[in-house]
Amino acid sequence: MKLLNYTSNNFWHLLDECLALRQVETSLKIENDVKLIIEDVKKSGDDKIIEFAKRYDKVSLKVNEIKISNLKKLYSLNQLNKETLDSFKVAISNIKKFHEKQIPESYEVINMNARLQSIWKPMDSVGLYIPGGKAVYPSSLIMSVIPAQIAGVKRIVCVTPPTSNFNPYVAFLLDELGINEVYQVGGAQAIAALAYGTKTIKPVNKIFGPGNAYVAAAKKQVFGKVGIDLVAGPSEIIVVADDNNNPEWVASDLMAQAEHDENAQSILITNSKVFADKVLDKIENLKNELINKETINLSLQKHGLIILIDDLCSSHEIINKIGPEHLHLQSSESEDILQKVNNAGGIFLGNYTTEAFGDYVAGTNHILPTSGAAKFSSGLGVIDFMKKSSLIEMNEISFDNLSKHVKNIADVENLDAHKLSVTIRQTK
Image (tube, helix red, strand yellow):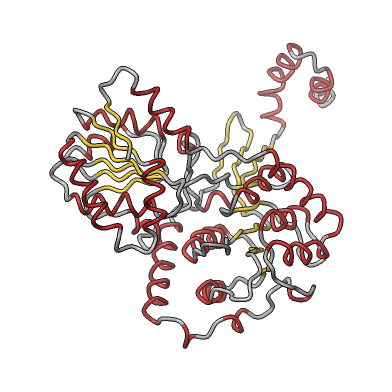
C-alpha cells in the first residue's frame, strides 16, 4: 500500500494521481463494439440474442429458452443450505423495513387560489441486470428488487447471462421474490434488449445493475432512450482509525473491499505510523488464509493507500475530496468527523460495524455511487424507481391573480403566443 502524508506540500496532487490510476475508462474499441451490438439487437432481436449467447457465453439457446419459464426447475431446496436461506430471509426482511420508510409523499399547496400538487408514481417497468460471469451476487439481486417492489413497479424484468449451471440461490431468490420475467441474456446485448425490445423481451423504462465494461458502455449509449441508474466503477472504502483500534480488525476491513476486484481501492486514514505498520503486518498474516488472496494482493499493491494525518478530525477534507463509496469511521473522533462529512455513499460507524453488514443484512442498500459520484448522487433506493408529476389547477380567481405576471414575463421573453393564451381568456 502506498503511503501519503497529509502534511506534505504536494499531498493533494499525489492523491489525485493515485485516484486517477484506478479510473477504468471504456476503450474506443469497446464503445464501437457495443454500438454494433446494440444496432444488431435493434435490427435482428432474438436471433442476435441467440447468436451472441453462443459467441460470448458458449451456450446454445433456442428462442423459447431465452425466457426462463420455470424457476423452480433451476433449484432444489435439498441442494440449498437451510441456514443460508434463513440468512437471505433475514436480509430481505431488514431491507424491506429500511426501504419502506423511503416512500415519498405527494403534497398539495393552495397558493393565490391556484391548486398545486406534486404527485409521486412508480415507473411502469424496470430492467435489472444480474451479473453471472466470474462473480454472482445474490445479495445485489435483493437490493435491486425490493426497492422496486416497494415503489410499486408493476413490471420488474431480470436479465442474466446464459449458463449451463444457473446459480441455485439466484433462482431461489427470484422465485421467493415473485419475479416472473427472467431472461437469459447478458452483456451489451441484454442492455440493448431492455432498451429497444425484441420479439421475446418487451422494452423497459429504466435499467439498473452493475456489469462489465461492455454493460457499462451499453448503459451509456442507451441513456436517453431509457433511464439508467448509474455507471458503476470499482468498489472502494476509506477506513478512519487510530491506534486505539484493533489492527487485525482494520486489516480485515481493508481486505474485504480489496477482494472485490484488482481495481478496488482500500484507503486507511490514521494518525499513527506505528498503527499503520501493524495493520500492514496483519494483512500479510491474514490474507494467506483467504480464497481471494491474489486479488487482494493486486488491489492493495495497485491502489491501496495509507494516509497519515496528525489530527483525524481534519480527515473530512480528504473524505469529501474523494467521495468514497464506503466510509468506515472507527476512531474516537468518529462523531466529530461524521458531522463534517458531506460526500460518502454508505457510512459505517463504530468498531463493530464492518461494511459486510451493509453488503448483506443490516437493511441499507449496498448499491452505492463509486468513483467520487457520492458528491452528486446517492445509493439506490425506492425513489429511484419512481417519478413525480406536477399538477396545476387554476380557477377564475387564481387566473386573475396571476395573469398580469404571466404577460409581463412573456413580454420580456418575446413569447407572444404565451401572452395570447392568457389574454384570449380575459373577459373584456
